[in-house]
Amino acid sequence: MVDNEKMDVLFAEAQKIAMSAYAPYSHFRVGAALLCEDGSIVRGVNVENRSYGLSICAERNAVVAAVTMGRLKFTAIAISTPDSVDPVGPCGACRQVLGEFMKPDTPVRFGGSSKNQVNTTIGELLPFDSLHELRKS
Ligand code: THU
Image (cartoon, rainbow, N blue to C red):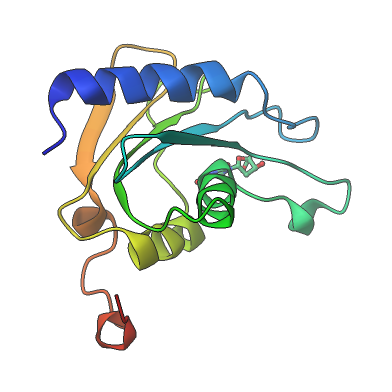
């Protein structure tokens, strides 16, 4: 069970790492902090490219980094978008990828530069997960 204080810590980590985003084209920095089942935190940022379509989101970069380290189970994620005032949720592709490794009740927090944050779950972000029958844990 991930409590509110832990989500505060996770969001602070996402805010910090967002400063490392490589976003010279959109000027929209994103930082993601994944809480792994072992208690460790793995971070990711968006990395853009001058061939725009090759840009990779922060959330997916965090997942790829964690899996590379052998961490496959995540108990929460926080996402910071400091260049928006209001919270901006993960894109559809990231929701699908997060859903691969997180149960529907896994907490998600996202927020921009204001105090206004959204607390939700993977299941709310990706309802009726059409391929869940295929997932082998
Ligand atoms: N972006 C993310 O990193 N995560 C999302 O879920 C939404 C979009 C990035 C991609 C691109 O570098 C910039 O934000 C603007 O779309």
